[in-house]
Image (tube, rainbow, N blue to C red; front, top):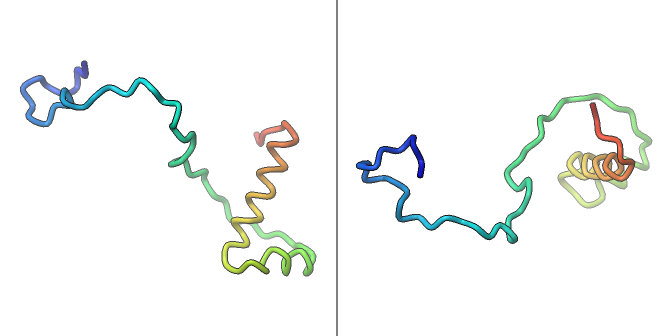
Length: 77
């Protein structure tokens, strides 16, 4: 099945069942987009709102922006 693994290799994958049902798979679970550091000026009340739930405000901001980007139907170049 896999030409890269010799058939006499004791670590051959022949005992592993082939997956044919991918209905439970999670798309993008291990995908991590490249991050880019930026400087942005936001209103103080917006920053306070983002920080009210504690750590991770930058991740929340990114999620909000991504949701809007996807909703608009226009992907980044």
